Length: 357
Image (cartoon, rainbow, N blue to C red; front, side, top):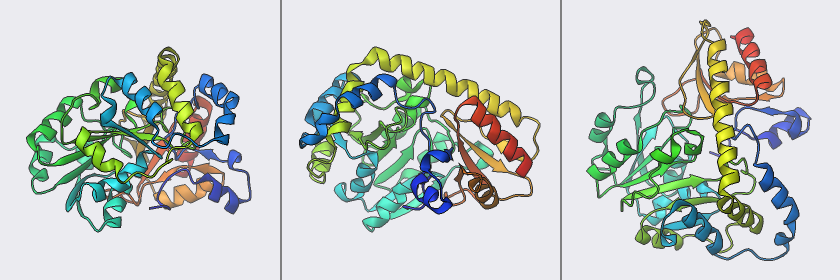
């Protein structure tokens, strides 16, 4: 779904006749703080790494990642963003029938479709706050060989605890569970809820550097699984799939724990404060319903006179980009997703949404 993502600022800027920097992008779920300053300086000072081939298998960055998370390097694989693995998993695992917990990121279904894999959806309902009861989910898994769960969920921001995920995975030991933890670093209790290190042989964890560190343009992500699964997935990885600058940047992040901790703490503080302010502004509004989120983005339902298409297009002409959620399975043209930014920008969007709705 190349046209179904947020953040397509280059194409939009071209169509609007402006520079990409002139667009206020509240559609991409990226850290509002930007990249860590130390990382930015490091990359500027090490641009010379692009003059040579990167490590063919990203071995050193894998070792740094494994050391940071306390896992065996043989259970980690680096790739050109976690999306690379999403598209190789159905092929590598020879998936026949996949279950996708929805509403969610469209690429899981697109990856299945690419490899002619039959996929079905279990849709969490709005009445449940878009979080299905784990006992009900248990009843849906039987008969599927691969299950995709985005945790925290995109676009709803709901979260299953590590204990809930572990219980589900242990109940179906012959089913592969792909747990996408791309947004988990935004959760204040994220370290406790991660499946990294649990060691379950049927669990495959997707880890993204793009969102929390706002380095989506560098394209690097990780997959963590059993040694046998990693060996299988490695057969479908291309040589030199991770560029030299991305490898150097992530090694810097993995080796500067104190700096990273301060940065993530600042991120948590900003996001929690902005979510509270944002929700407070809509507390008495009868035209927009906000859903609680554990992440840096919020799902909203338009209950007034306007649809998501109208709101999206109107804001777009003002060079403000939000996510129209009408193409998410389980949602409708009444849903939008907003990635929070600084207070001034968030307040500006609140005022425009209240006026439009």
